[in-house]
Image 1 (cartoon, rainbow, N blue to C red):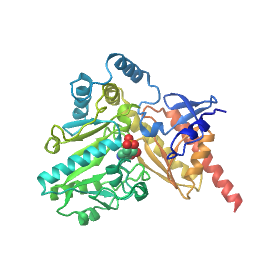
Image 2: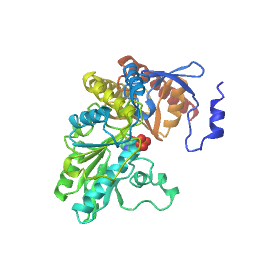
Image 3: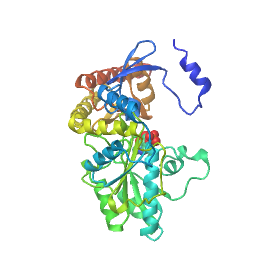
Image 4: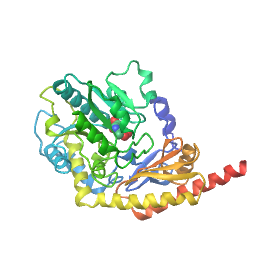
Length: 401
Ligand SMILES: Cc1ncc(COP(=O)(O)O)c(C=O)c1O
């Protein structure tokens, strides 16, 4: 047995409960542990390895860039930073980009832009309407915007300026809007909150309300963006345009990168307003440019849509296999398997023993986020494993009654 878990526990802070696996290597949808065991990885760094583990093309780009230029700071121009910004602008409805290093930082940037815009253009408005069960990151402003109180409660008074409403309820947004409101902040699908998919017209109705009131719509596409839901951005499927958007996770294919994008009229940052030492570093943006190119020219988004449909069908069919399965939800390759009891941690633990890595996103929801390059055979194999787990678990529970 590897001694790494013991050494790890002796020196790390205890804010993570790790799975009992030490991963040494990955390739595509699969990883191997210190004992040589192979797993199908349907978490992928929590949706960051959009092209799978150790993608050879991405590895070549990163290696070449590392041998050429890694970091210059934002005080200089670089071709690769310009190129990724151009790609993001060309493949979205947004006009301007600021690069940072994570999802939380992207959300911080979005909050600062919306507040500055509100203070300048809406008589000092600074309040942002967010939703219960949302997740926007762990920095103090992002966590203040996050609708899960226990993530912020241990840390003293939260940053003011956020109000919370139920997700998928436009009337509550209307009721919460005041002259102090500058923006509404939403995930197109709540990821960490349980893969919660809103009604088909929700985002359209929120967009209409924001237009009517003259307030901004910020979409947090950190989890849903860059092909994850079967289109480049989830807003495309809702038929709307955000004013401000965040991206991170899959954008770097495994390299840490975040981005906040805004329409021209709302890109209010001026020199000195905001910054990041590492943001836009050549290594991360070269990776991002490769990822975006593969999404489109390499057919990766099309694969995400096709494999997502397959995963949805196969997961839905598990309802016939086990009374513990209540259905599936999501879009593209962001999927939640709904369970009829709070057994998600047990299902995840047993799936791991059978060689499949999943994530219990709620006590009764298991999340699936394979790489967007996943194959049809890998989807079938994963559903076979989890199907066996829920069938056996249901039988054991019935026998124990
Ligand atoms: C929608 C959303 N926003 C923001 C974040 C925070 O991203 P990061 O962990 O890179 O700071 C996450 C992470 O799960 C997320 O899902």
